[in-house]
Length: 524
Image (cartoon, rainbow, N blue to C red; front, side):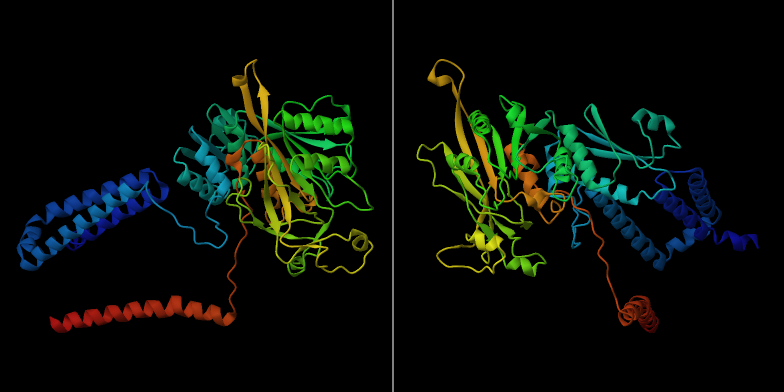
């Protein structure tokens, strides 16, 4: 009986070794069970070899066995070569995301941010053993795939309370991002949260975005549908400070104001305010005007003259776009999908939607050569600029009048680049030139709380701010919320899928195997 059992040791030995290796693969560490199993497998294998040494040597001398041994040697060599190739290519792999929503890819902005980093990044995610860490692990692996100096660790604060206290962890799900000698704590496992933390940590300078108030402009403290509270949060996430500025009280626009924004003024600016803005531009300032069409013959004369001085002309019209009706909008919500070649919309392919927009035209290039104008975005060919505003606001039917109205595409966004000189000394050689910018957009609704997440609205506005603030590396498409894509099958399709995968394919494998086995027996 003992001899019969001994003959089967050659089966037990590799099974024990295989079990030990599988356990190591799953746990990524040799635990006591794995070590004991591996030792038992190797020991039983040696015992079998020593116990049946004579029988083994006799069988090896047989012809069939020699062929078998040769085949085993060749197989072993091939396996070794495959393992070597795998180890060489382990850190040089290439992934392809074939999902419709690019679920397993990071956004353009994240890739740009990672490409600008110069120091290692370390991320600590604190989750309990009962929490699912699959999503955060998958996301952090995507960061590591792009930036090899990006390392992360999943920590259970219950098992490692010292580390949790050191990092200031307050609850499960806290994520700590370290870059250089700085760290940022976020309570989000989303790409947007991690990327915004990297932006904040990698920026040495905190710039300020100023919003003009006092003339009915959109308020960044307004939480309603027509307010700018949410876009202010998006601006701050890009590592900016925001401040509201009442020009009536100012003698000069603050020097730390990187970009000055006038978001939808409903009344004209006074001479003092225009003077402050002109002086700000002449000193190299950056200005954004979001100007809505005006009702009841309200004139923004001073604002219009200011923009015209810098090569931008406000159209006294409202853009009509019948195509918006097809896209669940209305005639007064033009679709913007035509972008010129410019730094703001570089590699920008998202459509944007304005609401009650006016045209923004540009003058011919300045003869002196110090003002360069460029259109940024146009409406579609189906749109037109309606100039009969009295009939439009009175509710009368509107149609395109050739020779009166302006046929599409209609420019709705344009900027001027103004070269200004700054004296630094007494000689002409000490005169330094720098660039000022004036950007005009024919609508202020598109980034209100109710619309800023519509298609590319938020990205377009933030790209404009980053361009004017000299942060071109942040011009991109930002992370979006991943949406689940479901495969819906009818009952018949479900049964067909089950039959093919669970019945047909296995049956074919069995039939092929039986056929090969029968053919071998016939030949032998």
